[in-house]
Length: 143
Image (cartoon, rainbow, N blue to C red; front, top):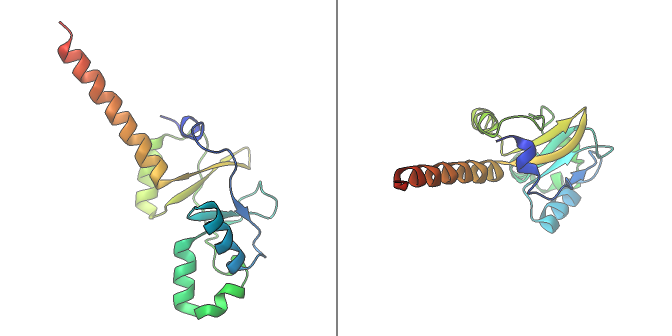
């Protein structure tokens, strides 16, 4: 299965935040949308970085509550793993596991077109495995 197929079942809007926004405002956006990561982008198309709840938690541990007033760019991950829409879900799962990332922006022709979480990838793989199981059962039970 390709990432583009997975994206068809998701909200096409990708939550972004400007790198100059405060960490506090990024946390408010994460809470309001019920998500775990925001793509950092100055224009909503280019991926400048990614900021996750994990980044904020580690930043709070290292820098204390003053971090909340700091810009998102001070806590974001700048070296972002991205993938194209035609990437294979299984290959992306391997990349996410190997690099210990939970969110991967999807980029086509240099523009942000979606984001995939590890939960999306796991669900897609489980759906594939269930379909394979169903086909095997049908094959075995067919006279």
